[in-house]
Image (cartoon, rainbow, N blue to C red; front, side, top):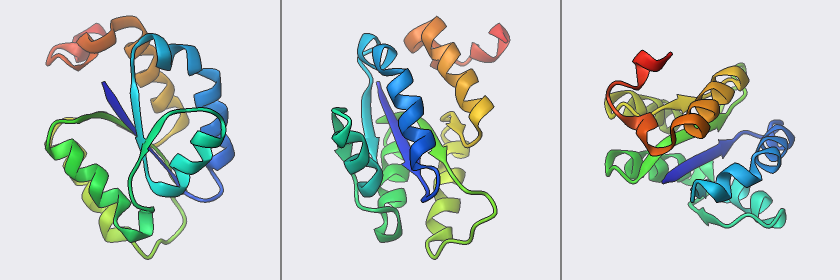
Length: 136
């Protein structure tokens, strides 16, 4: 299963803490990580294997959105700064829209991210079945 990780500046430490804490689960579920360029480089320094897209401002968010639309990326973790403006805001909004259209879980807040992660840990690939909402 492929999970995308996108991180805005100022949230990199939060992302690293999260993936380090969940390293065993990532390995046990055979999860492949993709990330925008800078995020991927940071994760690689911590010995994670990451398929790096372009940097966010250079259409990395759009590349991830395309992978969601193609059915390759099954979940997106977006550590974003909600009150910050970004030059590539249209790409970010497009990614959010594509995740909604293709019913791909997108976590942008810590607690939502933890809920997705717990369900993934509990249910594995079946998490993405149409009836996953009923287990809540």
